[in-house]
Image (tube, rainbow, N blue to C red; front, side, top):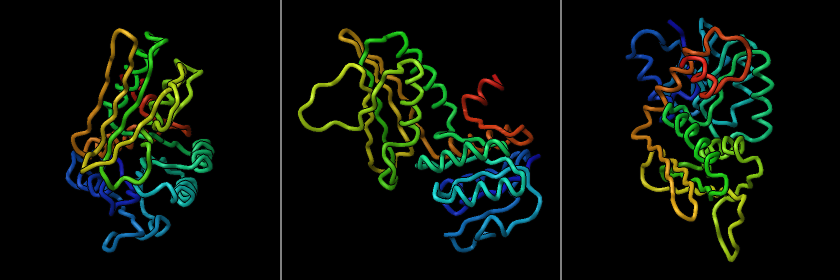
Length: 247
């Protein structure tokens, strides 16, 4: 059994995680709920909780990175970072933190997305001259675009197409260059998350798509990550690391 500090407990994803921890199988339980923006949550700040814990799960906001990692290092606790939209400086801080404590950092906690990434890399490698486009769709309240997951997919494709240049949306009069990977964002309705990778040659088109049917898929993945990282050595972990380790 692991005891989880939940940071960002009052948000949509925080409430999903709390529900799992309070009504789950007992392998992971809620040690403390923290949220500075929501009334009625146990604690306003991480530093207010000094009790027992095995791991922190963060679903707050990327702007809280400094406070989050400082607390994790001070208490020598592993941390699962499930927020998106981090700046380059915040990402550098996360990498530095991983030298002191285990850090699980992923743009998307869906197992299906991890499978999509692996399939997309294989497809792009098999069709080296194909055009590649990435499309993502999310609910109309999401503020960052394109999504962290779309960026993560694009970055992974650079492993098999290192010369790729990212183009965010298209506008104006300009011919598509061969080495481009287009990345496009849609914001509409209550969509919890859709990601497509389209690989097209002159004679055929392959479309790989993942659709999240509810936000619980991300909450479930974050709990799995928390169980995985508890007790690990310091380092930077992600979905690919976990899948390689457990499969």
